Image (cartoon, rainbow, N blue to C red; front, side):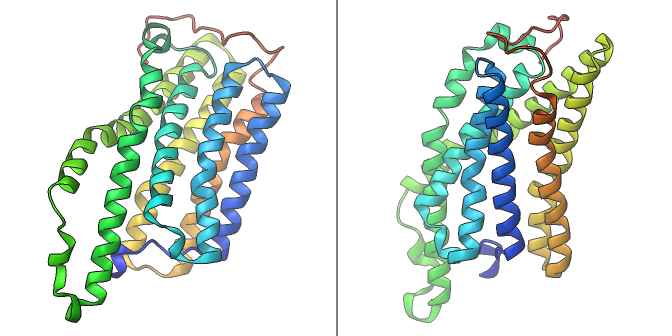
Length: 275
């Protein structure tokens, strides 16, 4: 039970792969931005890359310093970065390869999506990490501290957790799902319009989001809980890193598709298409 409360151990492979991923994401974002400095798609992808720098850096620091790097403050920072990154990724799928109808009609909601969830999600992460740390400490000193009763410190923590659930659901499930559906619709539109560069790029981005997301979010945590051999976990982790890297590589290869940098992204022809 105590082992389940600990973060999975970071290996040298995890540290190296995280640093490579960080360099690839930031490199692709900066390269496209340098070529197309006025393109909103390059700006938003840079935001995606910058927010991904937090978990990648923490993974490398964990290998170097151990799990002590995951303090309540750093976990809250990672949660805040995840909140902004999830919104930025959804934003990106709404303007790449072209603007989707939703952002044309409801783009102002993105401002709220960027700003409103950050503090509640960071607060929930801080409270949860502090409770887990206290629970782990109490379990380690069960004979001396009187057991798990010391974990309960009042009603404030449960209220914070309950209040944060809707926002966590929005940022952790709704926005990623809508982002994937936006890519699906953009891929269909590009295929229908015969836009081969857009079709190919969105296809590979879909592969990256679906395969990489399933491995990172579902498979790897289950392998940790099941206690599978480290070698097998490393293989799946390697696939997760590779699939995640398809996204920035596809964006870089597209050069934000073609031509000179536009003042704003083009709009899709079939504006009636949802998402």
